[in-house]
Image (cartoon, rainbow, N blue to C red; front, side, top):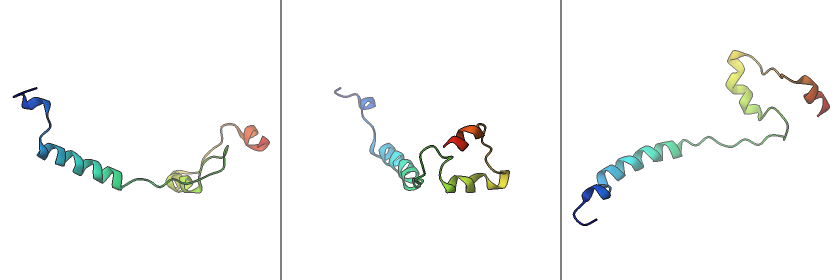
Length: 65
């Protein structure tokens, strides 16, 4: 390892990586709780409202729940 700088990261490269990762980690999506077996949280509906509602491919399973 002696005299082989390729084995070690440079400070400026490490700082650049940290700046990229911090922006991703700082924009974390919150976790929304929802009932087990349901179609998910109400907030999920807001994501697709412009395109239409969810359609249950297995309505019998929802009726049995």
